[in-house]
Amino acid sequence: MKRIEIAVNQLKLGMFVSALDRPWLETPYLIQGILIKSVEDITELARYCNYVFVDIDKSDPKAITNYSARGANKNSSQIITATPFHGKETYSDRCTAEKELPAAQKAYDTTITLIEEIFECIEHNTQLDIFAAQIAVESLRESVLRNADALLLLSRLKRSKQALYDNALKVSVLLLAFGRHLGLPREELSELGLGGLLMDIGKLHLPPEILKKNTSLAAAEQEIMQKHVENGEAILAKTPNISEAVTKIVSQHHERENGGGYPRRLTANQLHNFARMAAIIDSYEDLTAARSGIKGLKPFQIIIELKNSARSGLNSTLVEQFSHCIGMFPVGSLVELNSREVAIILTHNRSQRFHPKVMVILDAKKQPYEKPFELDLKSTKPGPSGAPYEIVRDLPLGAFNIDVSQYYL
Image 1 (spheres, rainbow, N blue to C red):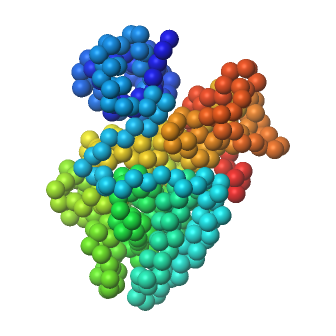
Image 2: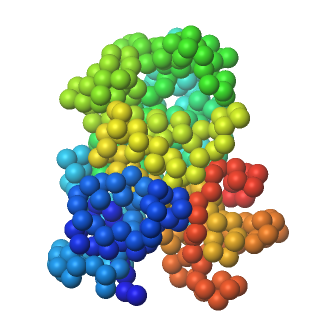
Image 3: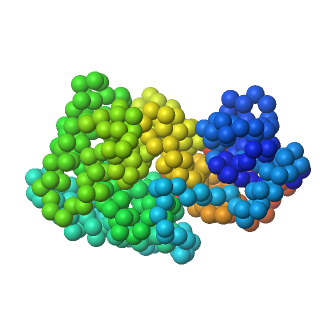
């Protein structure tokens, strides 16, 4: 059977989808095979998948010819279609994630130290040192431009003494990576990174007991939590040289396109594009955060939740682009291989997103290896069964009681 791997948004009428980027049982489809007959078929498929496999022999030859005529790379698993949110820049990795890791580590440590100093100033009602914050963001930006995976991995796995510091850095890195993916110019990337760093700065003036709570907030507590947006606006109002874009990220990241957000119930045409991006990152982080008594979601489930949220307020085009940005298997996430071994995603292969570099940590019986080992699924030799190594499913954070940071850091 001849088949090609195609991003869902590149599907054409007449193509026959023979396989998905996940097991059929994880979707509502009752039969294994879909003939694309309408745009609605593509839209529905996009709710569950980013990429699919098209059977050439069972597809309309015109659909395949039209696809090939557009110059698509049949070996590529990440095909980007420009949207109104895209910039004109084209970025490519300047080095491997491994080579970038020392510089990313330095940028990470420097930024955490500066975040601590900045946030302590705010706690003591001292003016925000915006210059220090900009310097920190520039070091993060340059690392992300060289290779985003290194900082994405560090920001996902490392922990400082304050969860609020960690979250600020993660949001900043995710927004930088998202902006890089969209091809935005460097100065706009800096605004995104700074906005992410300061997005929840208003939480510093909230009661500590609410911030530390890892269960659902009561209605009264939720009202108090929502005050962090106004608190953040007040802090920035006293800070000189803050751009409008950064201010909008802080003030609008909880607004929704349908008017269902807070604090002002703004609608789509009233929202800054960077705030729309920040809303997606904020929702993503909320879905990935551990909650007491709540089972963790798989990365695929998180993307589905985000796509569902697009129906009630998040921008659907940006959600789709973000899913391409982080990939089906985000850096730092857990997966199970066809050998039944468990691995950590280390870095992405940009041209073949289903064949990342991984660290294998558990054997087929789910017992820890004494010496975990790395595999590049793009070029590695066949596994114990003789078949090439492949990812068969993603796993929720903390599966099999795994603390990913212990293995990699």
